[in-house]
Image (cartoon, rainbow, N blue to C red; front, side, top):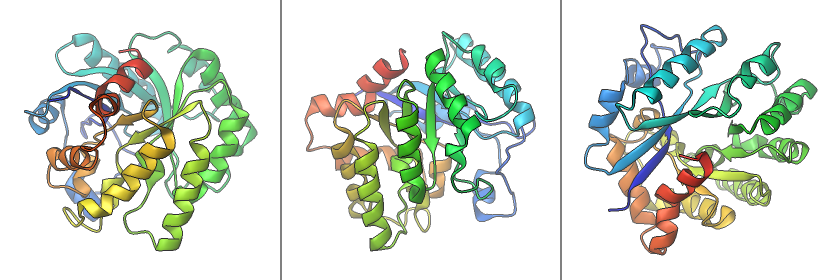
Length: 290
């Protein structure tokens, strides 16, 4: 069994942290509205040969960003779980961002920054704001990556951002948030835009997350997933793709973590063993230096 590095692991304790997006009254809130701890993650991945995990920030309210970063660093330092690195929360266009980000330059555990940008409160064109671009350029100077978690229709804006920040490394989360409920026209536009963004050599693609866009838990087939996965793999190539579990958010589309991982394994089974190892393990080890 190929060892797995999960590059998109969420953990949260709702008694400690306030999640900006969380609404317990929504269907999503009822599924995700309890604590998801390292112990639960170990149980969810038992028997799947997940050997390392990269924590992904969970969109805490801005005033808790430092607290979240400190907590996940302590977890990595403990060596008691598979979590060995982290992408922490940050607002690149905010006052004080430079001082906040500089503490992570050369950090053993913190490898990058993310701001969730696919939320309703993010205005169109947000990523091209002068202050935002300056913050993203700073990340390149500090050797930190930036994860793109975006609305698929805004891929063209992020192509412009990447071109403005050639020295920053980017990760495109969730296949560009391809949506399983898109119309054929929307899917064709996504395919075109994904192919274009993948031409940039300072971005890698993360095969993760989009399973949450299914119309319900388990309401998808391999034939639904395969076109998105294969297009992403073909556009980025075998050396610029990584697997992400997106647990527990993936539970919006699957009953358990293994359903998502095993579906992906089935879809890529005809690709060479070398390419599969790069997707599930080797590229993440190299990209994050873990």
